[in-house]
Amino acid sequence: MITLKNINKYYQQGNHRFHVLHDINIEIDQGELVAIIGESGSGKSTLINIIGFLDDDFEGTYFYQDQPIHDYTRKQFSTLRNRNVGFVFQNFKLLRESTVADNVALPLLYAGKRRKEISSRVSEVLKQVGLAGYENQLPKNMSGGQQQRVSIARAISTHPKFLIADEPTGALDTETSQEIMNLFKHLNKQEGTTIIMVTHDPHVAEQCERVIKIIDGRVVSDSKDGELHATD
Image 1 (cartoon, rainbow, N blue to C red):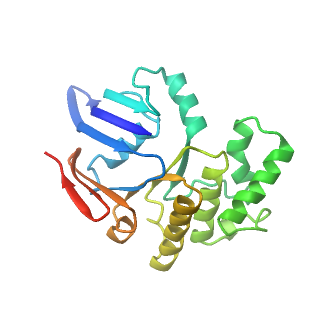
Image 2: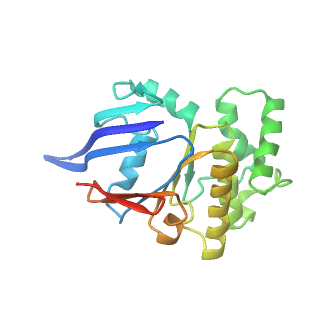
């Protein structure tokens, strides 16, 4: 599904040019549950911004579903993102004064879906994440775990090809974190959802079938099914 070849990323600050990602080579297959781990400043968030079509300013080649997209325009990247990716964030990014239903419906509205279709899909995904009947609740009155479930429902509402979850359990306690991880694993195994998860929590990472470790902008290891593959 995703192939990154010799991806390099630079940031310009004044007269200084910082090399943030160094020759990243990664392939992610459809249906995988992948954790990307690394310390703060390691480059993992920069990497998922590229994977998720949020950042088009990089060097190297990116093939998505066998299509070369590295030379796409910013508008093409935006279209690709809207049609293919769902995002889940640490701080949920919900409209706290809008109902759960309205929050989940937002991507569907942007996609131009009809109101009847939206209502049906909202109910369907809320049931998937264990929040059936919560349509009229306000996020500000819900627990952190419930809010994260709402954000997951919003992310999957448009049937994205893959999810990017950026520290999705970072603001949650241990028990609630495990509930959210169980939900991700269910979506991955039962629904076939491809999930790419950034985390600094080893307990979260070890529940993924594959773990990619980044240090100082370089992939230093890639472990899958219990086997570690170190990179040069």
